Length: 296
Length: 164
Image 1: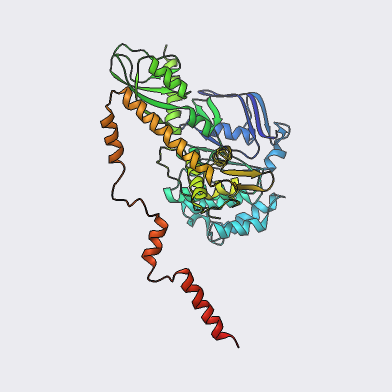
Image 2: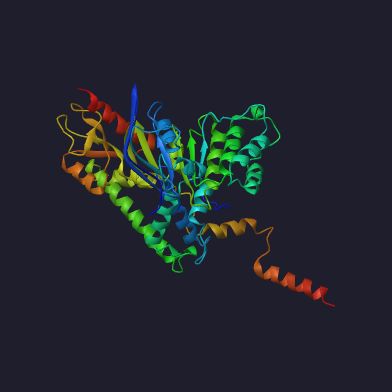
């Protein structure tokens, strides 16, 4: 299998923060969502992959290029779009295109024309006058027309209203159609990730909490409402969110199956309701659990 | 490219199963006849703004159920026997759901009558069951749209008249 990203024993330390990724491999052609609250280490992780900062420990390989020796080669094949797009407010999109083209041997002017048409961008207008949605699309055009093998987007939809957000996501999906292009995007909008990402990485306080296929993750987590005796204790593998002493409890299972269901009934619980969980609920369930363990 | 499939974000059914449901319905209703080519996986993912892996999972499920056949390098098609299979499939699913509901009702100590009451309150009686919806549609439109034999004879008349 060909990998877009391979990371091993990665560690980046700051005075009050540490990011640790024991291992992560991402096949080419995947869309990876990086999820976590502010300060979880999302941007640090992306900047390590872009070669903008160096790790204290560990190994990074991007598009077959081993860091730090081959950072420059990798960067030539990566398109990057950050929330705070570094654009010159007084210059036009056209000017930016010429600038990027002059430093990118892979610049595709035909694709740039096509994207400008599809995004309905006025290329002669000063960038400072574009709406938030148009700015993101302008940034997307500049990143995509270089025909990158890996597209990295840091919170691409954070500043957008719902309809612009949906439009940008749709465009993002559209450009992925023909190519085995890899996309990594961070977001605190778990709905976006749940819908368009093939895989997800959960980051929490600098730790990698989960790295998994999105449908697989959604398939195995359930919240179950049960009626039980007051002294009932949840069987192994099922977390009791309500706690002992009550007749009705809310439970969480991270490995739900018909068998887990009958096991629950055999333990004396009457199943009232079984709900699927959203990615956000799963993230919270994963991390609440961690915080509970941290308490001495 | 527009598949015409529409996914609900708030549905209890996961996205991939919504795709399975809707493709199955298209195949069962004949909207997508046997041999009809399905959109490519990446194409449908882009069209619906869902992940590639979601569509891949849906197509694998459809293939397992025999509704769709994938030919390597050529794409996915509605199976030739696609019309019968979904019926059995749908029946299995209904039976499965009913069994689950009955189990739960019995676990909670319901009586048979209580359960039947829930079923009938969810099944509106106004519906006329003997007439398929399509036929009803043509009857309503009947005034404007000529029936097939009529149309044919009119066409014949016209071509007769235009003949030199």
